[in-house]
Image (cartoon, rainbow, N blue to C red; front, side):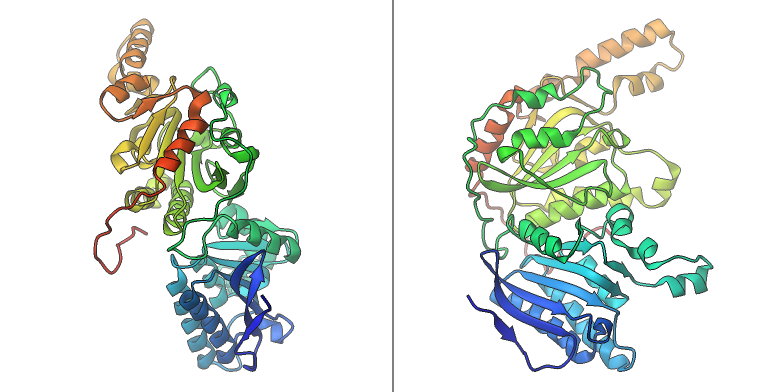
Length: 447
């Protein structure tokens, strides 16, 4: 398919067309930074708006390359009006068609906010993005800071979470955008495309269980567990440097694209804090919007405690993850690898949250809290010997997964070697899953 230009005679820094992108038809929009540093006039913003409207109406993914110094100061209010219409059109694409923005230069002021609307953002090392630049930061706060430190790719990949992936240059960024898009359908009424693979669903995975340390406090890299379950050991981890205590990744099992959410014991012992809740919630919502089944691998002692987190809104942000799982209608499979305590047990897609299949490995621990924590509360005045006896009894009576299975909280306690096979067969069984949605304009997501 040759490129079909959209409104090619409209002046300004933005060009758009419909093109083939790695075998997929997409709407491609690009801001030319050589034209007054990509300043967005009302005409230029109307091109962004038209590209987004075309993507939504034609049910095609939207891929954009952004390099913009912001709304055109010379034009004034008209430029702001045009940018607002572009933002509105991009918002209407949300959850309908995949949207990916590549930033290869500045994304300043209004255009920076578009990054928060898009499903995925790929930043190059030459990119920087912020709402208020270094000059305003210095004027208002007295802090002197440069573009890279304030809004460079490293800052957004580690601190803000705005960057889904970081590339060295534009060529690699475009390749990453292609990798991302390969996991998603053209629009929300399609299933994700199947991947060719020779990796049998029935392949046994004894190495997955062997990764878990003998002690309940030992660390391991949960990404190795994901690779053992995935086709050919391949995965695409999203936002790897931000909120490292939870892993969000795209992979395939039996050729079927899936999203994986997993606690990461290497970071904060796999506890959940505000960034981890936000990261996982957004990922779950994205998978749900585009029909990707969600695999949740659980190993967490609970929420990270602290006055600072509570004052910053741990309740509200923890609820985002609860809400995302609670409204997700795609196939959902939960595997408890080791620890699953307290409120974190609920929010990591427990049976009570409506998952389709909840599995546990034989040494999994499900409880309100661990034996040591329970002893610290219930045996405060006990001798060390009495406390040790209490912990042993508590672990035997309450922590093992067979108690949870007897009560219906776990569907099956399985051999880790059978995990991939059971997940794959469950995905095939759930391929036609449908849920009746409530009639409402929209839900009221906790923010």
